[in-house]
Structure formats: structure tokens, C-alpha cells
Image 1: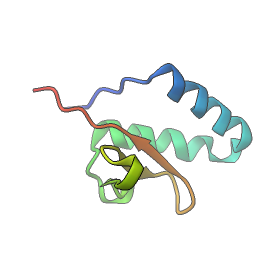
Image 2: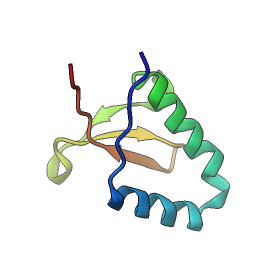
Image 3: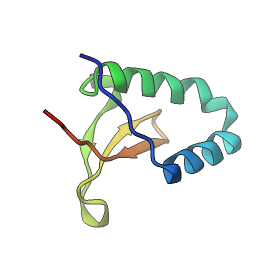
Image 4: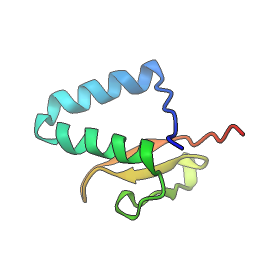
Length: 76
């Protein structure tokens, strides 16, 4: 079962700004989103919960230097 993304307007703006600054990461970013949609628990994503002021959010890896933070909502 593929998962569904819901992008907020704020996320879309930040993603566009990030990709404008780092065009060399576009393919890795898109690959990460495709893999996240197909299987969020794939080991290469390194999905993990965050703590502190980002408590309630999760993080997945684009590469060793960059991450995507997200909120996981499971609707059964």
C-alpha cells in the first residue's frame, strides 16, 4: 500500500528554496520522496523520531548531510 503525502504551503516554499540553493540534490531529493511514499521504513531512509523542540516530528535522510523533517499521521 503506497502512502499519501500532504504538503503544506510552508513545506512547498521551503523545499523550492532548498532545491534552488542545491540543484545538485534534486534527483536525490525526489528519489527520497519516492522511496518514502513506497516504504517509509526502508533502511536507507533512516526514519527516526526527533526530540526536544522538534518533538512529534520525524526525520528521513536525503544524504549524509541533509534531512527532511516530517509529521507522520496514520489514518486507519
